[in-house]
Image (cartoon, rainbow, N blue to C red; front, side):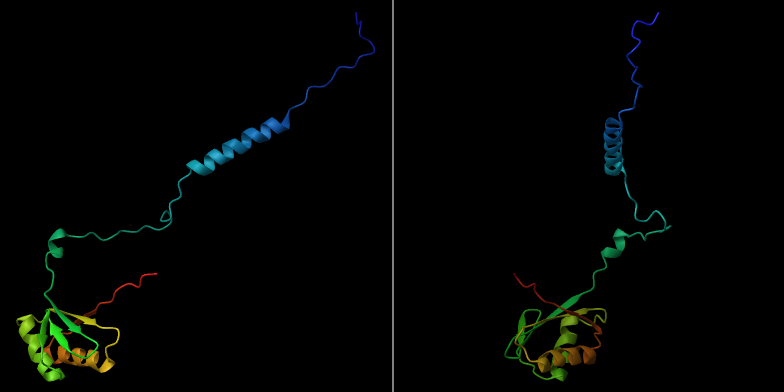
Length: 139
């Protein structure tokens, strides 16, 4: 017996809005928890460091040149002005160590020739390893 003859039955439907909301939450969760490896495609063997080798720090000889062209080796003012006499002072400061590093600290207003004299003196003294020092600008 069908007492509701005139009423049609509604067909069930799937609520897509809630389904899309759930999928977006899952997508966001996967995006956040995924780790990306930049070296996954490359097989790299990184070098190792030995602590014993770091102890072999070479001797350093610091040469400071001021704006007037005066030289100081290891914080001691010297009277030398030409590369030959500078080379003699550099040899004495290095104590015969041919692996010594010459660190050049030149004033910003120093003439280029004063710095070239230090480079020539290092060559004459047999000290081929050079390092130039600078300070960072404060902005």
